[in-house]
Image 1 (spheres, helix red, strand yellow):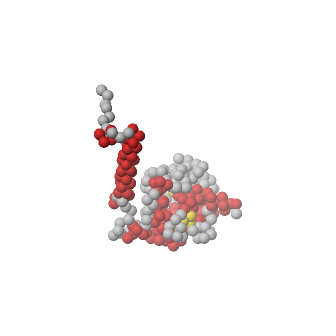
Image 2 (tube, rainbow, N blue to C red; image 1 turned 120 degrees about the vertical axis):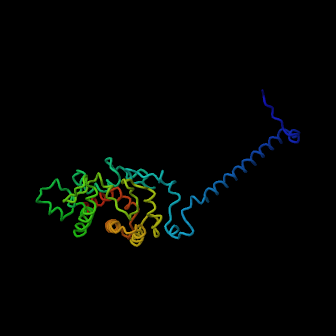
Image 3 (tube, rainbow, N blue to C red; image 1 turned 135 degrees about the vertical axis):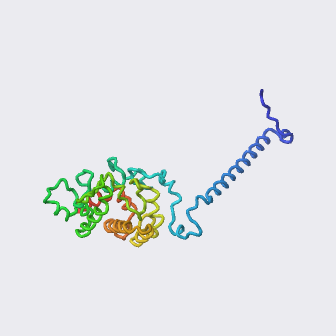
Length: 290
């Protein structure tokens, strides 16, 4: 059966050309109404209280802001990356980097495993040295020295890190008298009172990394000053987590010492590089060439 289009009598009496203009006007009018409705819907969704990141009665949420546009800058920023430290400038992580199937946290530690056996000692490459060389190599702390730390800082840092992180990473309940760190279990040595950029399995969380700068980068949106680092360290403290406080202070103070630029800023790319260990390689190459 063929459906017939029956025009209202007043329109039917109009000439064909005028009827055409009338229908076009009606179409545009409907389109405008739909467009207005869409804009209203978009405005109402953007003002959805469930999407707010600032609570009027919690001043701290206004002081430490989040980036509401991160999803437009990084694909799925809520998805922690297992092997790549991603940000808006590096959506696929460090270009050309061989992850060797390691998590981002494992990559961070692997730089200090100079012989690639998966175990880090305070003095660096233990298995490739004779026993009578251990004391000497401990004093030099090759991994720490390679990134530009002086002798006293290298010695104290290497001893503290291995002392604290050795036991949680052991494959058994027996502690290691040599304070070895097993890279396969490094996620078990993750401390609290940090930025939480590493999750509990050693993945890299892009949203947590971005929050470092949206919350604390007041002077420059993609860098931190020493004072801003101190503010961040205090803000990230978990209650009574004295070990976590100490570890976080040590890590960030060392990073600032070796990574700050001439203006005293710790740049976003420098901080990103420390998470996947690529910064250590750059510092080592720079030290060799100087």
